Amino acid sequence: MTSNNDRDLEQWAADWQAAPDAVKSAEQIRRHVTQRTGLFWSFAVADFVIGALALPVLLYLGVATRSNVEGLAMMALASIVVATVMFGWWNRRGVLRSSANTIADHIAISAERLRRMRTACRIGWVVLAGEVIFFSIWIWDRLYSGARSVTPGEERFAWSWLSAFTLLAVFALVKFGRWLERDEARFEALKQELL
Image (cartoon, rainbow, N blue to C red; front, side, top):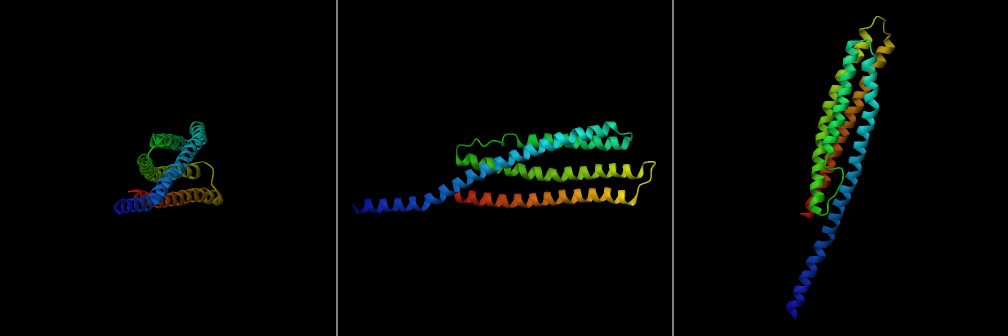
């Protein structure tokens, strides 16, 4: 009888020590996946809304302009918009919905989402560089290639606008990169608790 009681006590102690953390960690990973599903959908919607607003404007400006340089700059920016939206769709394929049934599936989806968000962040820097180059060409053409003279206020406004846009985008990309690092560390800690 003593051996059965000892065995039962050991089993109960092992279950008691293992269960709460494992259940808690598993639930945290499920919650993490669910939260990131909403985040991924919000990024997808934002990509398409921005693309749907920017593309017609850029195409109109590219077609309606009298300057070849401005037309090329607007068409290049429109191409960047199309490429960015297409990349966003391609990058999110297969991970927008969390159809995981097991914790291992949740972990695999989370790891893949983190990898894809890191890729999106790196591509964001490339997109920003392209936008700055083509907006600079457009501003230069508008300010210095026309027949009319430009006031110092117009010149300051144009370059200040581009500088503010660039600084805001750099700030957002740096902030997103840091958030991504923290999120990855939180996810790794949750994963280690389960393993």
